Length: 157
Ligand SMILES: [Fe+2]
Ligand SMILES: [Fe+2]
Image (cartoon, protein in one colour):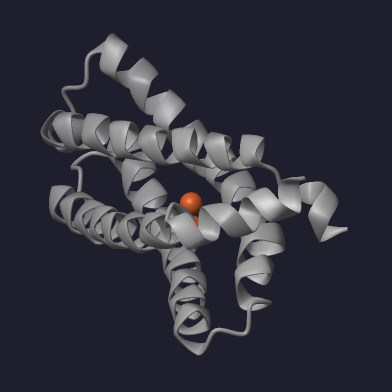
């Protein structure tokens, strides 16, 4: 079952998703001061809506794909050092879910309430983006290593 669910195409898709994460986090950072000050332009609001949908939906699918297929395949190799790294990735996912809920609630507060709690908004953004940067660096160091690419190719053929 696992074999049918993982492919080089899905890995390429994951790569694109990681790039989108970095892009949207940078976009969010750029508008954070305006959001905190309640001075977002209509265009910024539009972009913000897309960012929220991305982290709400695409990230959920992305993490489900990794937890359902990629992590089990890596764990099945029985390599203790690799397994430890996968456990860190899984813990990151849990932290990211909590972090996104917190950040999203700060974004919604900033969109609807006055005065805006800009401090909470910045703090939750910093925590979320720091965790994501750390997570992507570790994940990509594993997923795109020559050994792992070979492993995925074997499953793909
Ligand atoms: Fe990922
Ligand atoms: Fe991940």
